[in-house]
Every structure is written in C-alpha cells, then in structure tokens.
Image 1 (cartoon, rainbow, N blue to C red):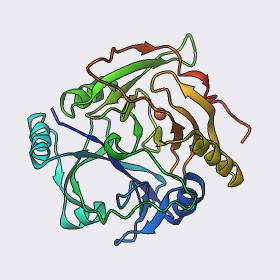
Image 2: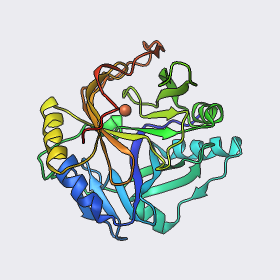
Image 3: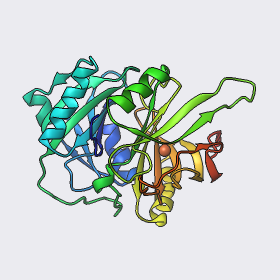
Image 4: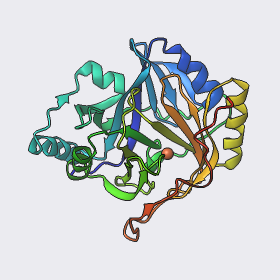
Length: 295
Ligand SMILES: [Fe+2]
C-alpha cells in the first residue's frame, strides 16, 4: 500500500483563471499570485500554492495532489500502481515546475478522477500574507479534504483502499428519498490525524468534485468568511452547521469552478489506533441545510 501523508494541493481549470483571484482573496482569504507558467497560484500557508488554477475550456476540478514523505515512499507508490496494473505517467520537467516539486506521477482512479503523487515541494518558506488576515490549518494534516464522485463505487473503494492505502474513518448512506436508492459516502483517512482527507461518494459530479474543505483555527474566521461571501454575492450551498463525524463547524459556498468549498473550524484529529468505524445516519448535529434557495 502507498503511504500518503495528506492532500497536498488541488488543480482546477478555469476559462478565466483571474476569477479565482477575486474569489480566493476577497472571499476565502487566500493569497493569489501568478505562477511562472501563467497559472494562478493560491497560497494557504508557506507552500507556494495549495490551489493551482490553470486556463482551460471548462470551469472544473482537475487533479488531487497527494504527498508522500520520502523517496522510498514515492518508489513504493509507483510499485503499487504497477502491481495493480494502473497506468501512470512520470512528470515531465515542465510538469514538475508547474507543481513546484521534485518529482511526481499522474494517474486516474477507476472512476476517472485524476490524481498526482508528489515528492518534495520546493519552497522559500515565505509565509502567507492573507489579504483578510486569515490563517489555515494545514501542515501535517494536509490542506483539508476533498470529496470525489465515484459512481462505480466498489471498484473505486477497492482501489483507494488496496492501492492508495486509504482507510475507512466512517461511512454514511445518503438517501434523500426514503423509497429511493441509497448512495454510499465513505470518509477516508491517510497517514495523518485529520478525520478524512478524502471522501468518495456514489454519485456523479460533472465538475469533478463534490466539495473541497479548508479549515481555519478560529470560529470567528468562519464568521468573517460568512460576512465576505454575502458581501461578494457568492452562492451559498449549505448553511452553517456542525458535522457529526469530523465535528467540523462549517458552511458551504459555490466556487468559480462549479464545486463547493466547505469553510470550517474545529475539525477532529483522530488517534487511529483507537478509532471505531461507525455508520452515521445524520450528516450534522445541527444546521447544514443543503436545500438553501434564498441566495
Ligand atoms: Fe466536508
């Protein structure tokens, strides 16, 4: 199995990458800058970027970047893909430059979601200078979590578990109509204490992602971000609420790339030697109305 340490970055595609400058800086509190290749890089911490926005003909999510800690783990990741018969490409010099890393490989999971495994970020350690004074919880917990569409759920789950080494934190069955079918959502952790770095959902999403979560260290920062989404007329996707599983207090808004951003505080850090897997029957302790139609 791979030994993935966290979600390192995501890559999105945008007809006009500059739309992320305003959304990233004015609403989320990230720091935007131009990458050497013309991408927009959004900083969340002392890494050069955590979200890369590249120009393309569709506004969508493109890649989840996962980091490993060592050359040995990077080699092991390649071996796992070979063993499983999964085709991967080695990053070209230009691709490594675009991701600001020492090495990377790229591949797709059985549901067609694209992933990169990355070794060694180049950094000048320049701190985040957020235009809104915001800081984010990243470090050894990675940038946050991403929720990916996996309609062919069984094949996807087998791949994430047996090849990529994710383990089940807990699970949920989403059944909006009591007489309709239930869609499975599995919350998965890698080798860090964040409750889930990845969730896989038995449903399609044309934008390539259901949501991306980023976490701040202070509840007031969530409140200030709520003030900002209203001021900038961003579409609300779910009201403030607190999740049952990772205990995150968060709200959801629509990003320019047609997937939601969950902006939260207070996420659980788990000792995996003591975790017991549950099937949760509610999404949230309170709040999180995903049926909001007023904004
Ligand atoms: Fe989430």
